[in-house]
Length: 370
Image 1: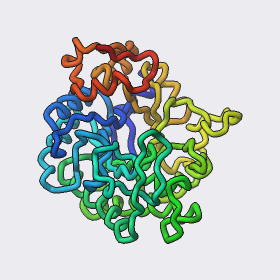
Image 2: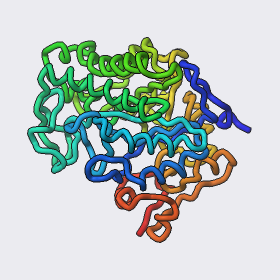
Image 3: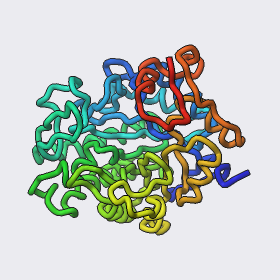
């Protein structure tokens, strides 16, 4: 038995069966109209058997918040049945089911929305090929988006999820409002760091208020953030440590760092050899549990992540490659690292997701091949 095998209790009293979490990963496998598909339910069901908690691939709260093709939608009541099926599939063997919620903002895939529907804090395109120039959100639209996160949280409660994760990472809309690269506003939502921080805090408070009104006491609310941006001007570690400090004053249940590697140091300052995990752990000072992710493929990786300062360890691409990866890691065994098209179906990997994994940068120990 290791610390990984121990139960873990969140600040609100919710308890999970061990310290392994399935990381949120988009499956590209919902129905065209936004309904959760049977393939997605099967995909999550087999992967939820040995983890303490599953965080779903992200869902969007408004139609213009979609980021990926075939992404399931939680922004209207007609999709409640599919959401309930997904929650049930995840919870069947005791894992907690967490619905990740977001708005893609300017990071929508080209061709997915009309150009007039692509929005952000300001009319600044992302620094990537084929990036669209977004339309700046009007003040009343900002309020509508905040309300959409609250409404989607209520649907998550009604569908039977055990919690929600506010997706403030990976350069999507919440992060876009905080970033000095994408937010050039001079109203109440932009300018100084404190003003840029208002939107992520407003979204989180709206989610928490909905939970207080409609959910049981042990409904989990987490927040995911990326520690830095590479853009200039972009978010620094100091910016996000300040946001983490403010988030810790809210009744959240965890902070989830989106990392390429669990033992990552600063991407902006290569001379800084301090682990990002340790810096956030010090800032949180016991107020919030910390979830880490990034190149965790073995029990040795997972235990090292705990030693680095994380309270819970999220498994990413290895869970796609091997549905039983969590169980194997807990037993001290090596997960299956190689997937071919011949065994894709028996690993319960939806076809669209498999095609994406053929080209996605992943840990070199993993292999997805035709």
